[in-house]
Length: 152
Image (cartoon, rainbow, N blue to C red; front, side):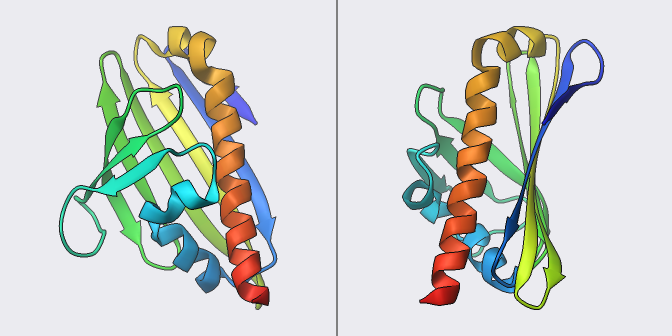
């Protein structure tokens, strides 16, 4: 699902139900450097600092057919989700990853990407479809990994 708010602003959201506990999904989600193993939408993910991830941590993400970008974690709520942001010429992107328990062995993953800036309409035309496909692939990969680990 995506929604235009105003010229220069767009938001995309992907939700998937996961047949695993919220804590299991969080364990998979928080291991961001493993994302390339889980989804074809990520070629590499590199934590640029030392220690554990948290607010202020920077992560370099390389995605197929897109320029590599450095993201900074702006919110980190262990077990519940995180948000990271990046800026590039003419656009600011905020991507949130939220885990919501729906039962003892089930949860929902919500990925939301908000883009703001004067180049957003052009970027949406050039790579919007790819971005939405990548978000769906990421959600599916995280779901599969959490559910596989649950049954292993």
